Amino acid sequence: MNERNPLRRRILVTLGVIVLFRLGQSLPTPQTGRLPLSDHSWRWIVDLLTGGRLATVFGFGVLPCLVAPFVLRALIVLIPRLAALRAEGEAGARVLTRYRRRIVVVLGLLGAVGLAVSRGQDVLDGAVTVACLTAGTAVVLWLTELITERGFGDGVRILLLAQVLAVLPPEFLRLYERTGWAAVVVMAVVTLSVIVITIVVAQGQRRVPVQYAKRMIGRRAFGGTPTYIPLRFPQANTPAVLAAVLLWVLPFGLGPWWIAVYFVLVCLFAFARAAVARNMDKVADELVRVGGFVPGIRPGNWTAEYLEYVNRRIIAFGAFGLGVVALIPVAGLALLGVTPATLFVAGVTLQVVLVFLVGVSLDTTRQIESLRQQRRYEPFLR
Image (cartoon, rainbow, N blue to C red; front, side, top):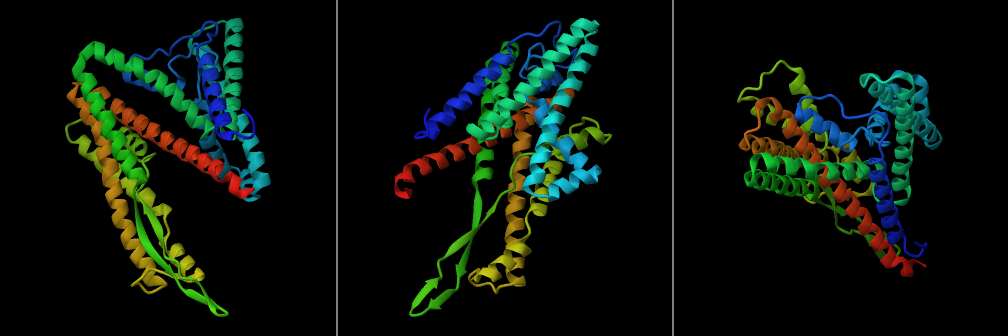
């Protein structure tokens, strides 16, 4: 664990924090227990977000850390002072980081108070429960920042991955006890299909060739090196969740046609999100500024129109792929005879969990590969 081997040090720090996190989710707190949920699908979602048990010091898991950034964004829109801090640059970002930490602790405190009240505890037991869960939330916040600074990947996502992997095996075991080997085979096919398609969509790209004009400096020519503009497929992250929320809000029944509505909404959300995030006019203007052009296409507006045409086709294909990914878990659960009341919630949850696992794995792998390359070329940079 010295400075000469940062890769090993980061791996050990990440593994050590994960072990400490799971130990904290095994230490019981006084007089707490599971939420009184009758629906198994909703209980499964709560277990995924909290690590399987609320009766522990780290009972809320990384849930407050996940919610705090969204609360802070809403406050930035509502409070002009926070919006001014965001515009101040690095100094304002440090202040917003302190506010985010306080919001995490406050959310843990509110959740602990709500849990103590829902359990009907007296004043002394409730105070102990609130103190334990609030302190545990603060420690989890510190662990996430420790992984982000000295380990691999984003700390919140890594710890969330750890608690999700801790909850999934018991759920699959209970599914096997209820339905037998057929469920194991179906869920294995569903898992592999979602993982493969998600990786293909996440890694796929269309490379638009770009040529730079040569520049004569004295008697020598510089530039002219061909390169490309990578146009990627829309990433699988939030469209399915947004479509799920919309389906729950709208007065739709769970008839046989709701799956088609779900598929269309996922595709539309993925297409709209990717189309808004990319501005081909800026790309074309930047090419003109640096002296680049797409072979066979005139610079300026013609290049922007061509890039927009190619980008829309790529986004449409990627959105269709994400729609297929969203349908695979629902179809697999339907084959297992899951009731319509829980089919939607369980299918969406399974799809989001699998996509999340793939995303965290890809990001961590890229960071590990980057550090390996840095260590390999470090002797040449000295």
